Image (cartoon, rainbow, N blue to C red; front, side, top):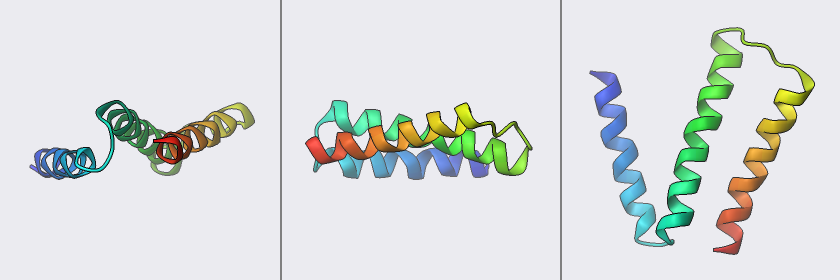
Length: 72
């Protein structure tokens, strides 16, 4: 049930973002946040490997999401 509630809240926030920014940027940021969240939760709670390359990729994704917002 929490999963469905999370989906509904997530789509509401996406809908709110679409009122301010373009669809392509909003969707890219939305999926990026989901991907980053999954990776970070996996590292913290499920003890997935946190090697240097993985951390660099996560930082790169964060910078990409920020850059998309800045240029839109």
